[in-house]
View (cartoon, rainbow, N blue to C red):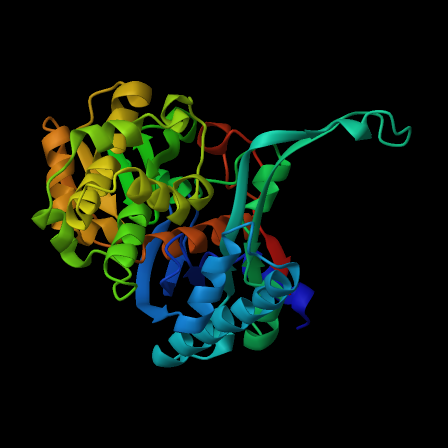
Length: 400
């Protein structure tokens, strides 16, 4: 059958085998998962077949990090790395398929959101468009940009790829995030318990699902920084030898400075109401640098401890201000789940909730991308106004 026929055949299947690919704000690795999905959200049954994490080559990771600085990023490098990352995503997909003892024809789809390098969540107007007769109105839009060219993934793997998952939601008036909340609602809602699914990667994101909640009942937004500030401070104070606070050791040694924490929490982001998203543009290496330069008398370990407390406090603040409902369980995923110091700080601030780590703490986001692709292929809306602020729409670009 030709590729159009293949797509139609996949769309009609009762179950699909999908490779999910994810690279987060920390840019440490490509997480790849193979899942078998039967049905669709909210009743989709997901079986994990294999998971692997593929670290970025050091030089490429460094060059991607340069792209986050708008004063240093170059358009030729953005263009080049878009295709380089496409090659890396494709290589990760091919490797995990081979390691699972499978072939490309055994896989129905690849799902890839790409590596976000810039995110502008607030609408920006172009007033000069209002007077152009063939436009007829002022253009105002949010925007987001990810690299990791999905056309390269499809070409190198020979597998139908659903890529660039965020942009259709932005076109529909949303933030293009959080995407993982669709998975949270489908897989983790409970008939009796109110749950907050808290992902702590570079940025921290919550999905609140009330007991037996429908997709319109959930609340989802970025609570603020995850590991990104403590990672950046660790990198600075280790003389660029360490890229993150392994096992929260620096945070455990240090003392939280309440005056520094208060300064961190004064950022205007924490007063914005959901739906809202953020990124390293606000809470990235530049924020860590400002923090270190402002509080020069504070030791490195104390600043890392305070940055870790900042993550915990911003999460607790988000629950108090924007969820305002009792939360029975807080389920943690992402790299932050491996930081005992951070988990301890969260438990101190959320004494009425059972704070625990999700069994799929690292592969969850890649699994979420796979579920979105699974449901998008079936013609389902894979976002929702309560998640992103966008009109319901089908996410992803399909590469045959």
